[in-house]
Image (cartoon, rainbow, N blue to C red):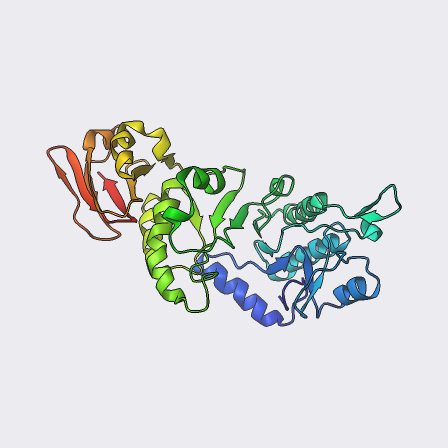
Length: 359
């Protein structure tokens, strides 16, 4: 898409190639849109934002010159939805990405925002229902064509909108490289729990190297911070966005998680597994399991600043999956063993182990 959010396509052949290549790779190629602005080169944005103010979010907030501020309470929402429908028909897109979904106060009465107070002054309102209608209309464009919708939003996790979206990308603005200290376990569990805590799949967007001053080496922060981020995210079933991280480690972790590529995987978080965690938690070590039919993945996260020696009765693992009989470390390839019916391994400080159990 042109600029930062328009349903118009400037290079049709390139768009078709991107959709085709994404499909060949097994990926979703998601056109980029924004819920609160439209690309400056879109003629509709020029007319309805600059000339008539019918779509304009007021008071206008500062935007780069290639954007025009819009409010989803206006017919801007219908324009975007209809345009996405054309992209489905002409290019076969399988989903969309909406950035900038955080609502801003708007006092533009031309499209239904704002109200007049007792002194005759127009006061702003928050267009939450406008966002809801926007995503409802976008979803309808897929449904009425017999397509399965996929709507990924960024900064759009609030009641109403999530009725019509599928994945929420959150985390931008949480600066730092040590997620074992940036969040308590309770806070992470409340905000970032993976399996449908809020009805949509949450995905965490890290910001390694940002917000820490001009002299920070971003690549260094990614290498230091990614193991600590995964130590938290894997405990809670949280997806991690593959940007601003150590991708090598993230992709290797995904490859191990793909060992459970089956429809019915049970999630056993540390707070529901007291028989294992009661002995580990005083050392700041936590255990979460993902169990399939014949396989089980065990996450051991050490949130302390000291390496920990971990010992777990293997019988406790087998109570969660009676099919498994052996264990291996397919991620780090570090020693792990079963000694006298006890699983034993070392977990480095502020790091994790991802262990694979099989028949």
